[in-house]
Length: 391
Image (cartoon, rainbow, N blue to C red; front, side):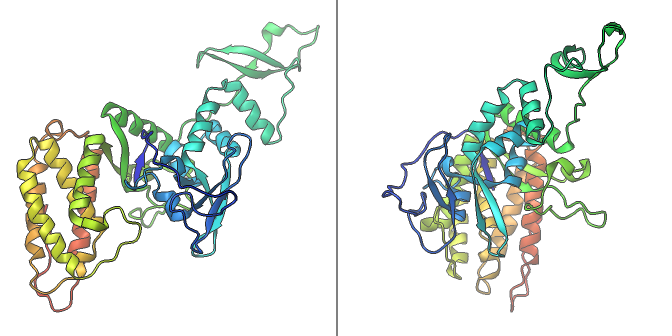
């Protein structure tokens, strides 16, 4: 999936009649479960969304409604990390519960609404956040208690409420030890997300594409991704976090990827429901012929890289062509040429390609390894020649 963190462009909203319970994205009520976000003081607009429409509202070009994008609680924590500010923002933010296909209840949040509340929460003084969180958890502090004193924190350079021993007239307060509040260390996941954000900012990225998620917590097999529904970032080990692979997406890269998606998918580009048949394999071959011309015309290696990424990513996402094609269709030649193109591009420096070495370089390698596994494991009855992707 693609995470967009900067887009402020909003497409026109679907016109709704008063009290009409139809999806705010597609404008239909076709029997699918609707997320119902009830109005409140902070957000007076009532919103209905299909789960699919909400998940894709920010990434489908013909929709472009980031204000209607929805995330699960795990998705919110995956994007923003954990901590008091995130917890408080989640408690203030409205949510909607719907049953998934396996009849398990899922809770969704409006991504932009959460971010707005989260920004408000993070501007509040640190002590207020701690006290509010503790009050929600049933822990009450009496600020007029003589055992509660506000003292400067020499380590962190701020002020925090600390508890001391009881102070009486017979005791010398200067001899009383100060117990500082315990500061929880950042988890490996939080540290990694901060580092990723810094790289995105440095590269002027508009977001990132997740290639491989956090590894499953298992001593027997770390080569599996964690289950998103039960995902808790705070419990991730460094080994699990190191398994993550992402590609930083710049505005130019996003444009080239969309260009390649249109080239391959044709009229189906941007549609919610797509249908493919054997003819799609020939559509892919025709798209490759057009791509080779476009690739040669690209003015620099950065543009060539972005075009190649967009073409490969679309082929991987819509992989029907790998298995549904006629014998002798010629696709194995296209895949070999695609691998040679990547072999040529990856020899260039990060500076020439306009990519970062921390995330995008290893992220590309992970993407190509996934593509290689998918193409080379595709079995088609009656074919003797296997598809080889030796990048």
